Image (cartoon, rainbow, N blue to C red; front, side, top):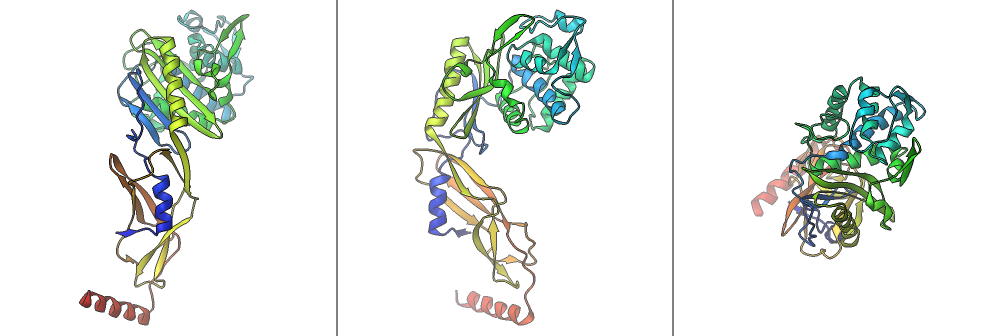
Length: 381
């Protein structure tokens, strides 16, 4: 176990002060029964409350319906001008509606707005049947996509979020879906920020209350059922930094609005972002045993960006962990070390480090000298 240089240690003490997923540095309280707050750029969870508790997703289900629609737009299977047929089932669907007309068709771009802005249950069935033949088949595809994203505690039975047996998720999984939508579909995500949409001469406002506040909000979706209460998946960006929140299980639209805004404001106010190392940057030199080089650089594979509570920059220990001398051969890219970040009140954070160069076996005389040096060091240490 080797400690980093004072310069690097100082950098990481400042930057990695707290990456624990429920951050004890500055707690925030919320009346939401389940909630999660994520820094989109770092992936760090800044706050979690019952984040893995099974809940009904209600209309937040529609984010997956839109995700699969965006996927087909991105790969060219559909265009915004494509037309999908409106069945009697879609036309008769209850709850919030886009007001599609049976026997006619609706443009894909209108359906996007009908689902995102108007939360139209009827529009989700049009999309489901148009993309998969039946809503049941589409629900299977929704669940498969959820698994591919790592949403392991999610199961879909319909495209709208209408209450159904075995139709469930968690706020953590909804946050995964939100971040994937933002990341994977930058050309289409803007629809989530639209505040109103008119279809069939009926103008409806977006139900996301965050869009009407001056907090940088640009998405995503609300939901409500009698059993689950009021929920919201939201995202906001300020000065190039994005926060994603999910709040669920609240008792009214007013409470939903207030609690969602509170979580976003808290995240921007109390947490900062710090860039420690660029992709491929050398962190340290690690000793090599019997190699053609005495040391090998260890590097971070991806840019190391972390979220940090602004008032929690002390008490951190950052340790470089590796074998006393790494044996050869070493191939560039091999994981041969790690950073371990530890502090009171948080789980250790481990960051893998990779060899930045190839190291082969040393020649006879070099190996002989290294062996004698090691022997003498062992005898007199």
